[in-house]
Image (cartoon, rainbow, N blue to C red):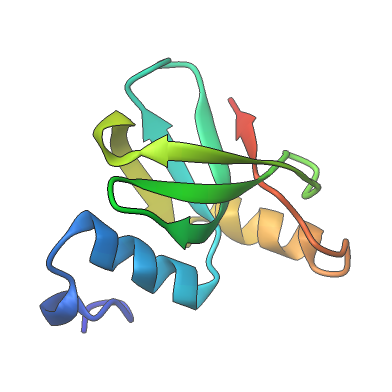
Length: 102
């Protein structure tokens, strides 16, 4: 386990996203579709070759759901200052969805 991540049991993108889903952490997803846009949200489902995410905007408000294919993902981040700040904003804002942002 490194920083709370059970590395020895994560053998694929799918395993990682299942762990993220279970942890209920906000995640930032950078894609190869648009260098100026990234998604911030919670993983709500892990599909064969994609994830379904609930997106949140910069004000901590859930606004839509989207499906992002594994092949589209360039990088991810979680538990950074930005994700923690959004988590605080949405605590008490009710059910939320993540948003495209940048």
